[in-house]
Length: 300
Image (tube, rainbow, N blue to C red; front, top):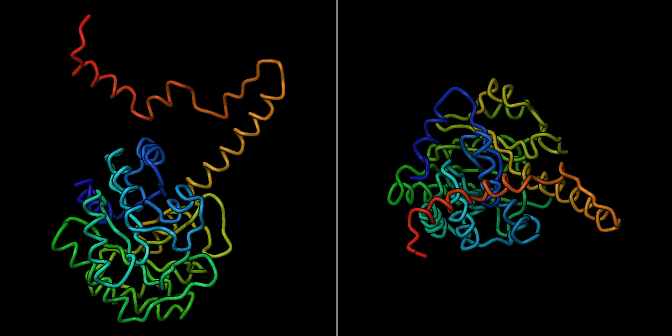
């Protein structure tokens, strides 16, 4: 369902899996049309794009499930869904995984932060205890096994920033032992940290977060995907790319509009927007036209 087996096959391939961030139907469809095999529904992207709020724990399960359902309905590629902390305790995680599986998720990510969580690259985060974190992963795996056997479970730890890399590695190995398919330590600050995690974590695929992908950040260094693959990374996500790029594009277009409304002459800036036909194609108008031709009962 929704490409879950394809996603597992992609991770099993020696070639690194690339997952640009998505936050709505158009962004997901663009990712699909540009030839990427999968997309990552970022909690930060949904909070930023849907609520105009930072990633500090404002999202709820119904909001994320609704966004997941709309996106998976718009594309055929498998979609990872960021479920933050699972919105409660281990029992809540079990329900969260079932809910998101029913919403079409191909994979669900659970993290070990205290609630309210915050973006892993922000100051002030804290994590739950080791045993509680593993318990949540066990609950996610049980929900997968009972309700969506093809679903992938991704387990994230933020412990590197709060307790050090040794603790993060211990948690990732425990998450893998609990049945997680993919593990991920967020906000690692050096390439050597990533190499060490790749060397010392066994039993699950390894993911890293490259943020914008085309612009560096003050936390995790920007490392090209081929080098990450050489380090032993199986999956790289770019959760901040499309929201930041969309913001830059909207700012440029609005600046052009300011110029256009300030002159009496016809003013065009075609590079600021896609043309009508391309936009209609992107939002599926040709398919609606086909269905109208097939099922229309109107007669003259």
